Length: 78
Image (cartoon, rainbow, N blue to C red; front, side, top):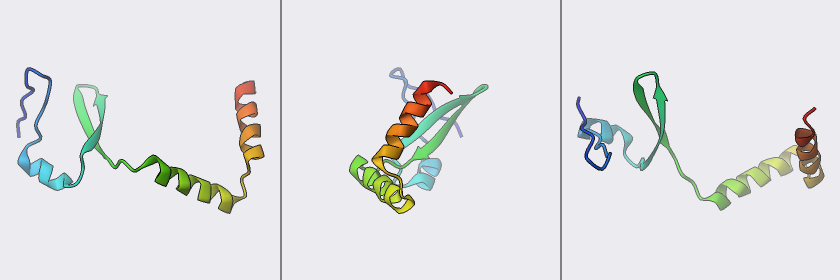
């Protein structure tokens, strides 16, 4: 399959490929040697993700003091 880059540097995915990624609006793009790799990305609202992180931290018993200590340790360069 061929895809042509337009004068505005846009590429349209061939229909056969696009149908395999229904519901995907964003792709992470990487260059590997002489290849362009598109990786589907699911975007979720920040508050949903943040709540999930907070819930996991609570289940693991991680506190704000643990986070502060971890940041100080990481910035110390040790």
